[in-house]
Image: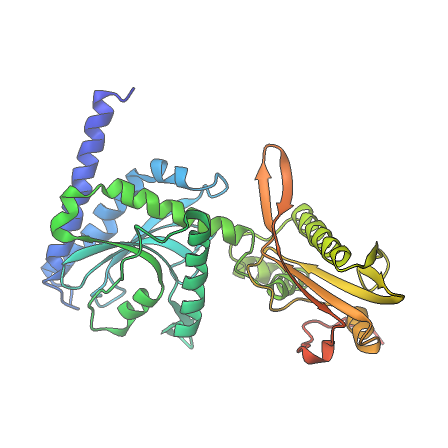
Length: 376
């Protein structure tokens, strides 16, 4: 049962959120890059009032996330130095998005003309380069946002009700990068703020952000090659790697489950093609020996949680095997393997299989990423 006091507090907070958003929209019409009285007021509303209104909702919003994401925070900005046309307030996991330039987060944007508020999920759109804040390339932003939308579509089968186009109407270049960095958006006209259930809108956006975080936790947005290269960097330069690595990597048991799932699907595929298969991964530079009609193929199997598998690492011995025995080797890649973590334990499911029997490694690009350095 909800107490009268709790209900009253909720109503007060809901009214406070609406009033704050309305005031910010009104002040958008009085925008100035200088710190005028109106911009000072807007700054307080963004950095204090709206921030506090979202922080009040964190206990509820946290239910949209897996318990591992227990570091949710809120921050707002109305410009660094000169005031911006496009102020924002974002909610994020400190681990998954340590600053506004990295990762994904729920962010509230405002139209420059005060006509509406956008509740969105987007990603960092800028980087520091040569002492300046530069925009991430359009191509990279498109890749990130398309991937995030694909995660949402897999879960909910639709982008709605967050399929609105975001158009802030600002003149400066930076707000336009915010638009390009937006994966999903729900526009609420300023004159409808009091009639829309904003808490439901925020919670729905938080659920979608939570799903994106889980996908990143499983490294679905990082190709197998990048995952492996990061692991090498971690071994060689652990302090630097720890500072720059976003989110979490897979644990050893999780990687093992992924490998076993890939081997299982590869075995099923080859048997379905009429091959007799033997697992020889232990102590050899290949994983499966496949035999059919007195012809044998030495098969390399790679599995990944990534939604794409456009790169992976191989040892020098593995590369030399495929080069020296070209025509008698094969490659099987299994991407989009899903890790299931529940009370029954850890397991891997799914996976999209691609196979190259009689693989020609020379048709692929091989780039050295590490060297073993020894005394002479």
